[in-house]
Image (tube, rainbow, N blue to C red; front, side, top):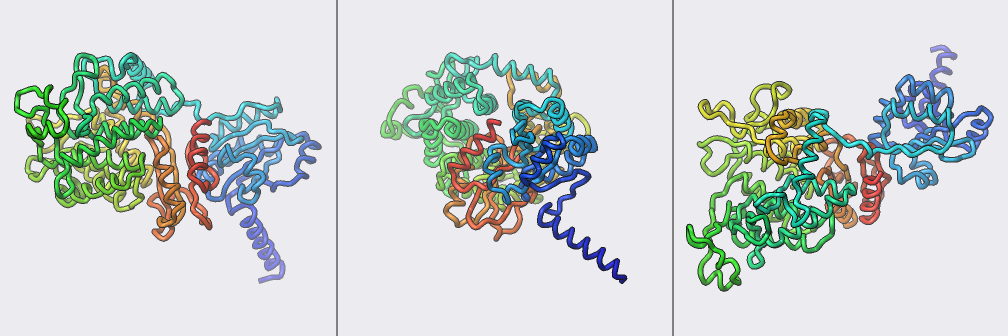
Length: 597
């Protein structure tokens, strides 16, 4: 090797080391990135340029995406190099700048004047077209601008037609009974999709939705049995005072889930008490000795005789006459419904006993209802066929268990049942045809072919989509869109008077979930407190994980978190990431701030 070659190699190695120390080894493309210094402001005044500050974190997922997509765009490169001095700063290396702009999350994109005046602040990932347009405006008019908004545009899947979406939203609004709660119908009950859609709107600041949800949940308290707990199925005559007394598992699971979510959003202790009252009934009457769940309790003490005079009695008075019959069939579907409801309640309340009950039932169902290939039969005798509802409800249950426990075995179980469902309840290819999942195996019935049900496909779209975000398996995202494509057909979407579950699925498929990750050992007290705080924060659409490095990488290792000396939480949502958060209070405050921008 010649002397000149050795010098050249040494120089290149020095440059590489310098870039590793100051540029994080991220490709710079053609932008002339520089380090922060006071001298930069003098140069900007002299050259009549503005200053672009790219404030990032090494571990920040959306920072990397912006580097790859936005800062590689030729037009963005051109306008920055021509009219700006571009600064790239690692927020960990400059706590003063991190503190100044921390409310904007990472990446934070700030344009400053030569005098140090903030002209514009962008929060999170910004598309190349949007950033280029904004920078051009600032060059022409270098005066303070409104900050970029990430929450102004409503997320959509791109599958549902805008006219159908607008009509579904109109029907939801028109069909709410704002006088006594519930829907404008003779029967009063908690419709899960309508309540969830209103909860989501209430969380985003819609006051009419908040009022309707509060009224509906409060009114439905009349359908919670004050003696034994549990939820009556519905009330008649357009009011809440005429209950039908049957207690079926679907109603119990919905009531427990919706009251737990309502308590998360409103902090109304009555709602949490109602969820616990349902749990008390399940434990007393619908739980088998081995931990699985029975199907229902009859409305009548004596078959065919209305029990209007029975249920007003106290416990002793009821038991003196007897107890209504319990259907002791143990179906995978009903077990999945209650497992998920208990997991949601455990997350909302921190009740470890509720989680233990869910885990016990899940273990029993896996042992007694699972079949070859990762799926589930309906009951003990699987000869009648396989049903999508059993597998869908167990899928949703496993996702909920993983979310509230961070036990990776539940995520693996969810992946197995998802693969089984895709193998048995889809006809043809995922990306072909009208989409949707059948209620049973399509090839097993030739005369009365299985149909596709709207409710099941709504829940499938949402479940497969959330599981995709936990795993990164693109096949699951395709499965979610397969269900959504069926729901998006005008005849399907508008078949019923009201069905806002389609809007929920549409919105969730159009954006990433709220993503909270706890970094720390699972036996660390502060890590446990942070995890509990993340679970309690209301969001219908959230991805909560716990990275204990002793367990290896997270299942979807899409964000590289730093190893810290103490437990911390990170939020990556709305295309931006937070600083490490060390207290439950700060975590809750930061999530709220992120959601507001």
